[in-house]
Image 1: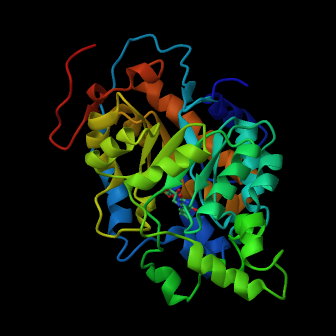
Image 2: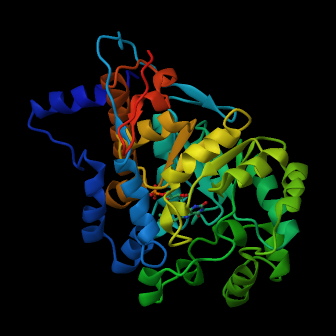
Length: 395
Ligand code: FNR
């Protein structure tokens, strides 16, 4: 495969035969198209956020306060964005964020995403709340890189079983999401009285789990389905977890572990003290705590606190290659993209996800080179001007 930016040439060359891309290349336009295509319930579930959606908006606005100051005449030929994050090789520091219940957006859901990820070399992070069981998704992903995201359930035996299965199915890093021990107040879903889990979507990893099955009297069928759903409700999250519980993860998972949902530098320090390998600065795309700060505004403090001791990753609000470059320049080692690839899935299945990934990587590479850099090393805070337009003077 050539460089990601070659996608641009491919598009223009196809244009000579009057072929244009099926989906927009400005990924901020996908949300509007997805609204036309999806049911009101599915669209509300992906596009919505918590409360007044203030934090979701803040996530986007924060990117506008940082601007790139380009440099000229610096030999940016042969740009290479490849990197290694938590033991996984990547063609660029971009991952597909864990997103549950993908079958409500496209029947192939996580399977289509896993295939698109494998085809583009990107790492997919599979949610515990997936609509297909992790073993099926692993089969669809083949040799592609994959991580597993844990929603830590109340039942410790179930938690151990889930991560044991993930290890056996070839997921190489564990992402533990901390900000969702209970679902937030989400008016778009509440107004439609819509929660996919109660309709049996997003529970595949639970229903296929031997520990879960034992608790509900055997494999889930019509006779125990309601009881199984209620068991899921009772077990989904554990609001009593504390930092002392993290030792349990280390006992049951011998690969890298990253904590997702970190926003405060002190929490990042505690993660390092607890022996975690990484933190993901994320506010769940504004879907959990409305009124919280923009995730990008939390990033500098976390990088300054632990950037030299742990792998700092970032998500929430990323829509373009420029957004990715800004988060990397602030100090993230890689960025997770959420809603954009789900809109791609909704609009075009596996091909739609691949389109989104290719656009993002092409735009990222062009952003890096047009800024005057030939690789990730050049992306430091010195390339950024903030609201008060200060920027570095070196290099
Ligand atoms: C999510 N997210 C999420 N996170 C997680 O750890 N496990 C999950 O199952 C889900 N499910 C989920 C569903 C939907 C529909 C969305 C939009 C998001 C959060 C996700 O991993 C990521 O943090 C955000 O999506 C990042 O914000 P952007 O890129 O969507 O703005």
